[in-house]
Amino acid sequence: MYRKAGYTAPCMVNHEVEIKSRIASLRDLNRRLRASGLKLVTRRTQERNTLYDFPDEALRRRGSILRLRQYGPKWTMTYKDKGKTGRHKRRREIETQVTDGKALEQILESVGFRPVFSYEKVRTEWSDGTGHVVVDETPIGNFCEIEGPSRWIDRMARQLEIAPQDYITESYPELFRHWKLQTKSKARDMLFAAASRSSGKKAGKP
Image 1 (tube, helix red, strand yellow):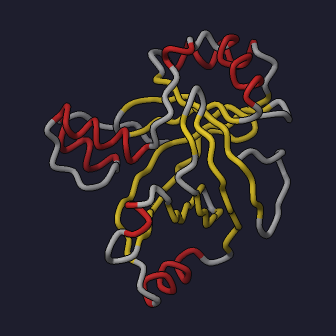
Image 2 (cartoon, helix red, strand yellow; image 1 turned 60 degrees about the horizontal axis):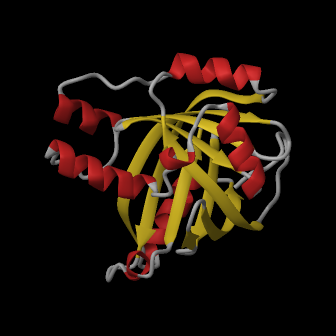
Image 3 (cartoon, one colour; image 1 turned 180 degrees about the horizontal axis):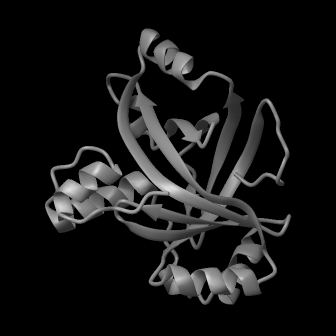
């Protein structure tokens, strides 16, 4: 969900509109980002996400997610509906900042939720105040995510030389499942250490 740099709110409800695209060259993308007029909001920052669900996986079955994220020192709790997928991915998102993420983890498990999937990445954020572009270095490859109003997304994608046929509307858990099928990996979570063991390569971290 897009927020202006420096803005903090206890709880926000929004309709998220976004696309992803695979990055062939981080150097080329960073050059285009600098030329696009976007401003760097957050430099490369380690991010860790954990999805929670009921024991019967009710959230997964209806296409919703409950996510606890640690981005640098900040913790955020997010709920997302299944939403709709067309040219862009759209869904309702409810998000709030959390003071003590470790305490919330214990609360969630104490009331019956369980962690079902974890994934991490190194994220860099850019924005022009209307929408934002994030560059995600993940254990399964590098991705660009563009979020904002629909027309802004398409205009920014053109500036970054991302064609509509290269738009990705799948989530990271879905992309990870595809990666597992392709690589025959036994990894349960999308973590740098697990991906490195599967591929025999070292994944980049800040």
